[in-house]
Image 1 (cartoon, one colour):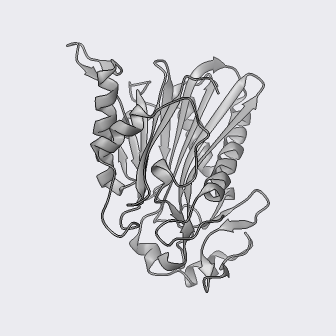
Image 2: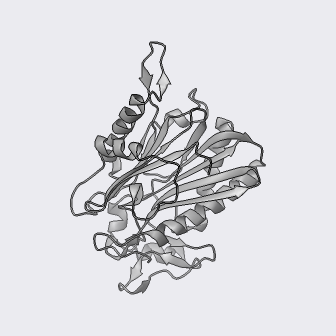
Length: 313
């Protein structure tokens, strides 16, 4: 992985929350697609394809729902201290740090969320090592399989995968906190709602959606659920092309979850480009979707049991 993008984490396993920061190279192009009905974000409009700003300084993924957006202040402080950010006409340095959140409040038995100090530490920990995953960073309090009620859910987490196609690389980072179950590439459930605490309530993708929602528990409506997806690449993309790639990622993630894209999901996908490598955009979208699916599976398989919530492992 070229060391142009860096990643750092703050993990609090006692209070079961955390945040993840992706520090970007000086020259980058970024956009995002907000597909979920219940998102929590900071500066999402700035990333839309028609807006003037092309690059960001860093990207924050965090637990704590809207409260966790406070971690962005710590990320900005760390970056400003190191001379990173957008320099205004008056010479003031303003780091541009969009953010997206998952809902993990109450998982650790109280209302805990990453604050400014957590964001600062995550940025301080940023390095070129994308190998860390599971119950850490923004995925610390993530859970999946909540459609029958929270008592039968399992641990989600943070997943990372790198893929190389000739001269083009793709680095995926995903935070898996879905209302639905997680399926591998063969359509087999690997983490999700448990039936009587022993087996999965939904065994395969042929499970009928009507039956799913007839069985859904009240917790499915009382909590919000989010999958945050980030795809970094050295493929040359305009901001509009990055937006369309981000849009296509959400469509392709339907293979990984069931049910997916409900009114209670706050899914957001980001695409960041830092290079000029040429690749067919439809091929890039397909490769990106496959890479993210592998990262989703890796997130739940790497997760540890926390706060009494069992993991896939």
